Amino acid sequence: MIGRRRHAVRRRLDPHVGRLRRLPRADSDGRRHGGGPDGDEVLSPPQPPLLLTPLVACDPTTDMDILWHIAREAPELRRWLVANPRADAALLEYVAQAGGPGVREALTILLDG
Image (cartoon, rainbow, N blue to C red; front, side, top):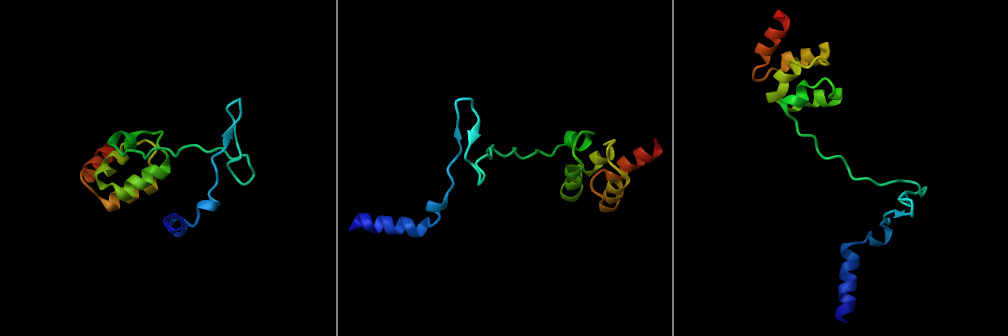
């Protein structure tokens, strides 16, 4: 009787157990198969979160989406965006209007140079 209750409780708590997909199995050559609906999807872990630093804000290889994220979400790093050669006029205008610690000084240095 107790075993039946546990089974019923487990079924109620986790109704999607029967619908979970199995991880793809690897062949002898290391290739994975069977992960997706087509059977050819390869699973890989997600990228770790990017640590936003002044170096990332200044780096000309940083993606523009990340630069815009810094401009919107990290006011303490906005002054470093001004030093990025990849920062376009729209990004610099946003940074100038949004402000933040050291932004006015950074823009003065950029425009005087």
